[in-house]
Image (cartoon, rainbow, N blue to C red; front, side, top):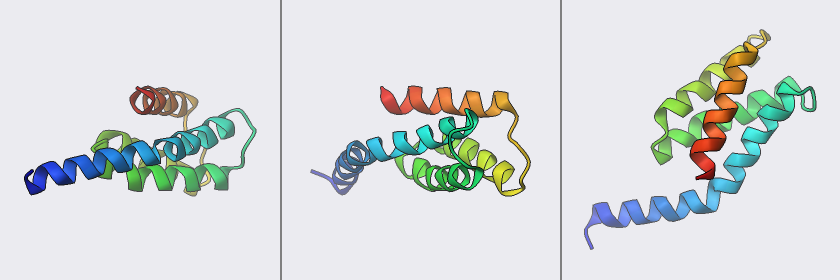
Length: 96
């Protein structure tokens, strides 16, 4: 087995282990969207997602999480459409 194959195998294993945590972070953002979590919690969840998703090859989704984080850090509310789109895309990609 080549080094590249080993790295891919290890990343796939790590992703399977981390997926429940990633989905939980998405749920925090969803809860914020519905008024069930605070902005600080949602910002922290977005920050964690932004940092982790790229590692697993979801760079576009990680960038979207960075935008959500920036909106929340600036104390401006993310447009509802942006939050809904991020939540839907993230759950779809990570659940499958």
